[in-house]
Image (spheres, rainbow, N blue to C red):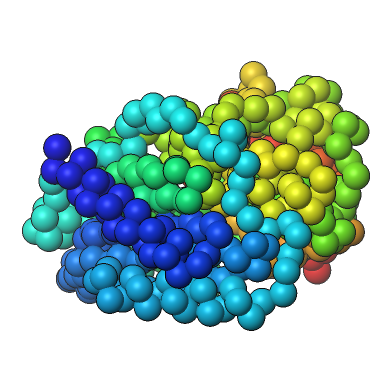
Length: 443
């Protein structure tokens, strides 16, 4: 109940702001307000390193004078400050040039149904409990094996917040959400070889986090298996991206079909709508209304209703990722993606991770990527990588100091298989992805 009271108070603040914008002559306005608080603890070598309580709030407003637009923000929610913030936005709008594509979304596209997506699960964790949990996690990692030589620490984070948004078309909504995480990173040494690796768990509900001991053990295990890594000679071979790194491929794909890159004509998938961009077995879709998932939302950053939809079916691109402004620039309609995608999911195949290694047979397993290395304009792809060399479906030895290169347009078309080892710890849900052939630059 306390939550609902708080949401209602913040809604009143947003409504006051919209009224003030109208009073100051704006023909339309939208505003967003957030309040967050949380606890972050990090422990290193058994000692508390940081202990922070967070309490933040912020208010942003955008006003329109016809099709001239101005924005301003503040962290002060007093009436005086709200007036000044609206004033600042209005004075900016009066001096900006007209943009025929700017403005609020069409009213009929705004969300009118607000299902409970179970995003709010407060965690009764105080500083002492958080320190104990982080210590337990780090102790598990440090005691896992004698070659674990040092630690970068373990962290516990717990955040809860409220987001309210409204506009002058009558949309005014808010919801509470939580996000909790536990992570650990350690170093291992064997002779001259030294390596680090980590593991983490994140969830809306703390009950869904992996246990502290299992996170510590996994961080240690991952670190140990990287010891005595070698480079490879330059070659071409199949590449298997583990689930954590595979999400980057899908993230780059989404960048290429996002409105901003499309209307600026800076995408390698320009005019690709309706064409084959993946093999036939690939389906990629959004699931914005999954209960308690990290990317769930009933509406996007503009209040437009989100809905489940296929972005790729049978390997064919069905739709772009658009907000109102980019949609208008392209002569299309918003897809409810102002602020990004919601629980982007690539349908998994039938193989688990071991099955994917067998499918790879002989080639490179990538477990870490470095650098940005994707040219959105032409799709050229080049990234530093680390992982393992695999022969006959069995991991042989760790690999480091290599670069993998190709063209993303070709890479997406030459995906051979998608694993069912799905990583649920983010907004992109994918298993491991096997790409037919890439260039490896090594020694």
